[in-house]
Image 1 (cartoon, helix red, strand yellow):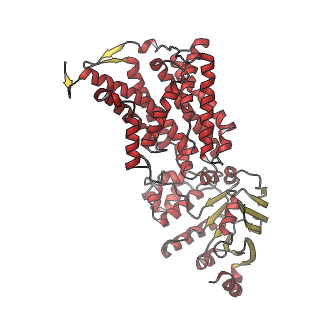
Image 2: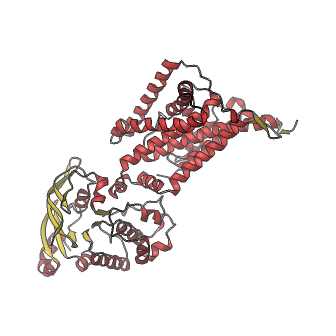
Image 3: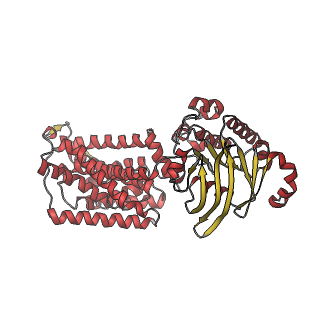
Length: 295
Length: 233
């Protein structure tokens, strides 16, 4: 069998793929966090819960309405986005004038409430959610076997990241978002409805998290705690990328996913902490993050 | 002359600190008014209170026949008031053209992008650079140009000449004259007294959060001794 650095190629590429898949979820989630933090200055601790909600909405749509994966991929993010909009309008928006800590505490409490409710209703164990039949099976790439669904996750999350980046960097709406991130008061004085923009942004972030949740459902099962496990890593990704940097969140997400995968090959014992070690090093050398602007 | 902006008994606060103490002023349609005054007497605050950035305010603001006190900040521009802040407010993450296109058009009669580029050729050349890569003078031009697109009837302009070279100051003066020809109403805060005396129709003198004098440009020679005393110029 072919080996690289004494490691079987199969194992290396296998872990790289797992790293890339995890990286896709890191990127999608940290992207939403970065967008929300950039404009609202809120550290959205409910992001993991919104990711979980996405997976659960997909699961419930299938169970009770017979709505399958493809429709859920669109409908679940819309439902969770709408939920996010209601939360922002009725509760979160009241906290902007206070210390940012209140936003953090509120979203943390919200996450606990949502996750607690789902644990009460569905138990802590996971619910299975099948990948769509069109994406069943796998492809032999010669050097490794690629399950089709996993390949799909990598491609579609890349597209979603790219789409969000284009929305923010290249559209009129995106120019409002960027300008309001720099100076919300002036943008409002120009006649832009900034409060509505904030609601939209929070909904967008929540919707992205839910989108990641639907993608994750066939990979990880649907469980009330699926977000809790992921969100801490995602916060590390945002910090490494630079708080509020869109490109930083995306690139760092994939990078850290891959770094984690490679660590599993070369030194498995460290794979759980490698992301946090990288975070510590980056914070020491570049406190603003890899892509962050120095304040 | 039909009044465009009427301000009566305007008070405003930054938290505990009471800054405006009953400002009264009237700006006629198409007039160019300059507010003079020493540093810290409330000139910038007057503009920020009229536009509604400062919400802790009492008194009366009527613009174009409409009571503005209850109008939320993001609707003020739609009523027809544009604002160019002292710090210019050019966005670093937006290109020059994105900066230019940022404020929504609120009424017909604004300049088209082509007209603006004709008036400010420098901006056309650098349309895809980041807004803050422009020189100070160019940033001031951009800050003014982007409001001209929107079709507002009145411009609140805060110290446009601050820190700029004489040749740029002269250019800003020309732009303001052109605006006046187009019928724009302008309320200008300016420390540069010589600059203001060349373009303004009328002056308000501000001290301790109030308007203490009001005179047309023709009366300027008579007012000089008093101005010397209050402004220390």
